Length: 507
Image 1 (cartoon, rainbow, N blue to C red):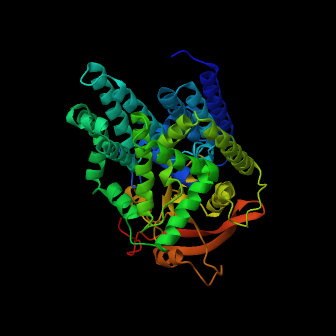
Image 2: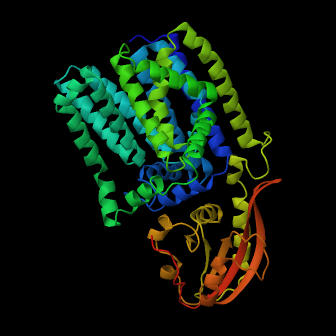
Image 3: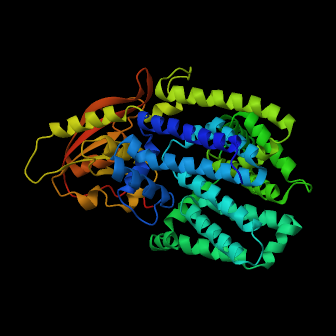
């Protein structure tokens, strides 16, 4: 296929957008989830309490090269985001030509979900990359002559990539589910089920995923159990409120016009007259969206969870842009989406949007360095004795990981989990199994509504009997200057007695 200016422009836009994301990745402090995954990267394993391990390995690679900095943590996830866009652009080119490739690159650059989400070091980064590559390899497999070595090879590649997607985030299971629905819904695709190649791909995927499964088996299936309970927990809110929240989240993360055009393009592509490859991508996207719509009937769905569905949806919309009417609407949609992206980028560096106090989502990345400095000062104020260590902890994984990242030399920081939910820190050696009698503990805790010395928090009430001396330290405000996001009270607990609260929650 001869490269045209459309194709060169598509690649140029993708590279330019990635360069902007790399710059922002070095400027914006890490949000708590990112420092949590950075902690994972310091303890590489085949699985973790919350997710599979791919994000930990991505972060580890960047930190080895660039150090424990925001850029080092994010560089490989941002490059994974570039790979995602390039795979989507390539897939659009294969299905709809160079013009579709250009539109796919423009849509991705103007999609707020991609512009913001592809900066952060979260499991979505490897998930989106491997999902896009899986669909690209699947398209190659479907275009190869059936029952040939080329077909067999591409199905094997599809399976290997799918296995890595499984090792990135468990929602990757929606890819084979969507493909199965598409195969069953169309006769020409259904014939593929009579060949061994799709089953080979599944076997390869499961083989690649085996280390994650083995890790889970060795840890009481804790990761699988957590995600199932997380996604299928008892209903919260009402079904209407959940569905409204899901829709509002998509309108914000995809922009209203782009989201509406994607839905319209998917509906158009699933009609009988639609091409087989567009039909497959549209059904995969629709299956993914529908899964989260059904999930929202009983449980609130986070806005980023359906992000995987935008991979095929972008391609379907880009191919639809071959018609002049679609292009006219896309110009307006990309203009609106691009404006939203620009606003997000400016807001991330310098707050300009009139968010109510404490509601700016980017503000949660700020204030942790000040908290770490205050904790370090408090630790230095404890009288030092030979053989006595002064440890640091928070009660939530967010606090513990941010402190570990921002404290000098990145020491071990514990998450006590006495009042917060269980997490990966539950599986690591905690304070009771690490410290020695007589050691000290500096804890940063969210204070009660009335922060009074006589009104100790639950955690302090639980810990007080187990230390010889407990005293209150500084009160630190999190967030950007003038936009408080929360408070943390520092507590100094001296002289551990060797016992621990019996109310610690089991995972």
